[in-house]
Amino acid sequence: MIYAGFVEHSAYVLLGIGYLVGAVGWVVAYRMSRATLVTDFAIVAGDRADDRLMGWTQVVDSFTHQLEHGERYVFLYRTLQGDTARFQVEVPNAQVPAFKQLVARYTARTSDPAYERAYG
Image (cartoon, rainbow, N blue to C red; front, side):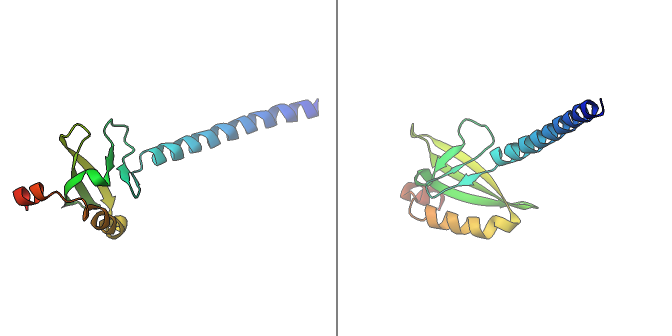
């Protein structure tokens, strides 16, 4: 009897621990899915919008806005249909210098002379 009561009680404890671990895992996965991924080829924003992938070779122009907690980078890029679209990424203060280097490296080779004449 004592053994059966102990096993039943420990099953509830394990079930509660399992729910807690599952909830923590869900929160971590949610935060990771909201993160913006920057690769050598593209930027992928994780905010579940449809057009949240921009290749570095598509960038025609970029500029920044200063925020309290970092900077907002705005990229103008050409879509596959040839239209111009806008892509925004908010970068925290701690990551601004590294992101600025990436932007300089990848957008220097993709500038469009027509945009430079019009907006430069």
